[in-house]
Image 1: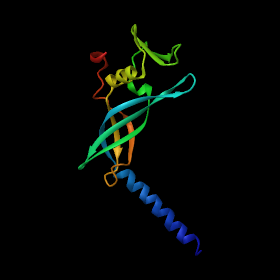
Image 2: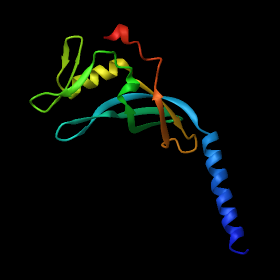
Image 3: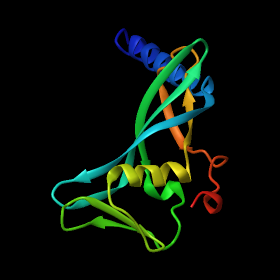
Image 4: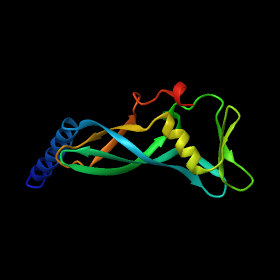
Length: 143
């Protein structure tokens, strides 16, 4: 009994701390700075991209990074992403060829340049990516 009581107290503390952390999160908008393709050499492109972003909260500027699925960018039908003979990724869309990773990054940034995150107001460097922002996506005007 003397061993069970401290364990119950510690577990209840951890549970209430976790619940309190989830209740205090704030939804915030961050600006994407860079997008990096996830690649496994020699010739496999993963369906995720690494996103580097920055956001302001309080009096500070914070940076972060995370992974987002390529499908979250609402890539239009007819896009294909593969390697060419020089082992560089190539994105083709409507007879346009984006042959370098920088061009693919610019294409994806035109689709969405903001990301929604949850941040902790006590420790604003702790974040969780929710999804890409839907308000910055107007695909028809930018492509």
